[in-house]
Each structure stands twice: as C-alpha cells, then as structure tokens.
Image (cartoon, rainbow, N blue to C red; front, side):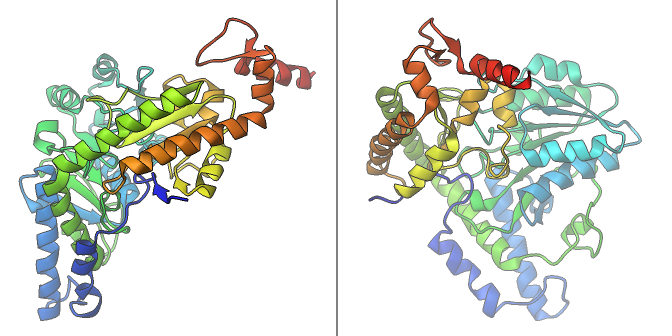
Amino acid sequence: MRNVYLDHQAATPVLPEVFDAMRPYFTEHYGNASSLHQHGLKVRDALKTARRQMADLIHAESEEEIFFTSDGTESANLAIKGVAYANERKGKHLVVAATEHPSVINSVEFLEKQGWTCTRVPVDPEGRLDLAALKAAITPQTVLVAVHHVNHDIGTIQPIREVGIACAERGVPLYVDCEASAGWLPIDVQEFGAALVSFSPHRFYGPKGVGVLYRNKRARIVSILHGGVQEGGRRAGTENIPAIVGSGVAAQIALRELPARQAHVAALQARLWKGLESTIPFIKLNGPRPGPERAPNNLNISTEFIEGEGQLLLCDLSGIAVASGSSCVSKSLKISHVLAAIGLDHALAQGNLILTLGKDNSVEDVDYVVETFSRIVQKLRTMSPMWDEFERGQIDSVIAPRGHGKSFSQHAADISGKAAH
C-alpha cells in the first residue's frame, strides 16, 4: 500500500534546510529579541533577515512592512479588526467576498455584533467574485475590503488586481488573504494594490506557529493584542524566533522554486482530474477546471450518492490523506459556506473532498489515487440507500440527470415533510 499525502493546504512537511536553520535558535541563539545584550542582538539580526525574506517573496518594498504573528488566523483578525478600529471615525462598513476563510468571516461577525455592518459580495457558480457587485458595495463609510487571492476550498483565483484598482479609486484599503496561494503562485503586493496581505509558511514547507502580515506603511491599523512593543507595537508578545527563522528560509526556497513547483503540481492536477473524471461516474469538479483560473495544486470534488466522511475514512485506510472541507471547519456537521455560496446542491456538498498536491507527489501517487478512489466509490455506493434508490429510478442524479425520479434533495425534502406531519 502506498502512502499518498494530498492535504498540503492543511500542512506541509518542514524542509530539511528549514529544520537545520531553526535548530541553533533552540540551543545556541536562544536570546529574546527584546533583550539589549549580545544574545538579543543576534536574534534581532535573524529576525530582520526573515522579514527581508518574506518581503522578497511577496515583492514588498521594505522588511519594515512585515509583521509576524502566531498564524494566519491571528493575521486575519489583526488585519480586519485592527483596520476597523483604526478607522471607525470614518465609518463602520466592511465589504468581503461571500466565500472568505472562516477567520475572516468570524472576525467580521464579531465586529457586526459591535455595530459594524458588512456587505458580502456574491460569487458565480465557479466561485469568481462579482466585480460589479463589489464596486457597488463600496460606500463613503467603507473602511476595508477583504478578498482572498485563492479560495481555500475550491481553488478559484480571484481578479485581485482589478479589485485593487476598484479600491484605490474609492480610497479604501484592500486586505488580501494569500493563505492558499503563498508559495504556489506569484504574489506582488504592489501589483495587487493591497494595503494588507496575510499568509502562513506552514503551507509551503515552513513550520507551524508563524503567521505573516504585510502592512503598507500608509495603512492605518491598531493592535488587538496588548502588552509589549514587539513587532513595531502592532503585535505584542515574544516572537517565536526558531519558527520565524525557518519560515524565512522556507520563503526564500519557495521564491526560488516557484516556477518548478507550479509546473509540477499543475501537471499532476490535470492528470488526477482526468483520471477521476474518466473512471468514476457522477463525479463533479467544484470551481474552475485546471488552468489559469484555478490554483495549480487544488482539486475539490463531489461524488454523488455517498458522503464525504466515508470517502475520507476509506481513503485514509488505503494510505491516502485528503480533506473533507476546510481544515478549520471539518469537525463541523455543516456544509462549507463556500459550496453554499456557489449554489452547490446540498447532497453534492455532503459528498465533498479536497485534494491538495505538493512538490513531492508523483505520477505514481496520482495513478494510485485514481485506481484506489474508484474502488472506494464503488464500495460505498453498494452500501448507499441513495444509490439503490437511484438505480431503481426513485431519485435522479444532480450531476447527470436521466430525466426520471426526483433529485435527492427533493426526495429528502419530501421525507422531512412527511416526518413533520
């Protein structure tokens, strides 16, 4: 049995070069960056180097625009709440895409309970932002627009440059969540027109426990953690120096290897989807087809008549690691808000898996997944009452309707209605 890891969006292995760079900062250079003695100076130099490496990855003008946090969620909270609080005299209105990451959505909901308002901009069935609706949503009271670069669920690449132009025309800062794109796609904060950008190195072969927030010097922001004066007074708390040093090296390597990584995973992505599509009936790709409008390492699939949890468990038993929904919401019984926003049928949303490729995956891995997952689907369908009802003509397919029987969603609604009476 092969061991195939296809959950690189949740976490990636730390590169040997990254681990080697971190090691001395646990045992030799263990000083605190805020200390005034030589041990502190040594660490401050390493911190400055890591900032420069992060700035280079996203083409920021200066390392002074880079702040380190504990992870992407904290970075998102700081970007949204920090800008909202800093600019509340101007207004208390936010604009976000309907398909943002939970850290963004939940930060917005927190502010809404305190009197802010938010316009959630719709997306099309492949997750593309409605640019006209976004422009119309911006008002004189808008203090921040938040749009992700790549969708964390379905891999859709958003028109960030156009969004940045629209925000600049209205004088509103733009925050871009690059959690799903950093290390896999080119990022240029200047071309984006972004005031703030966040990402996490553990998604591109760096360590966990570090988040990065880019902040243009002109963007007004206040701290949401109160304590010392670390990170320019924007984020209190002793920096995680070993992880930050390792993250800087991971960023440096990612920038160097980016074209090769993109080409490698894009070829595997195309092969994987072609194999799944040709061997498994009633399977759907969510988001754009592999190509320029989709992240090269992401596939989001829905397999009809079976649930995602069963697929995930049998994949795991077969040595294949995949995700069922975002790692931040996968313990919830609710379907992904992203799949709801693109109008995906509820039954298909429940049969959902996310497969994210990495630089060490191979053609042999992909072929093993296609062959094994085909058998898993067959096995689960033989156990599925929905599949049995479909074969007997009682319900119809959503993906490829045969023109007889009700859809599963209609059938489920009828059953619920009868149970209520």
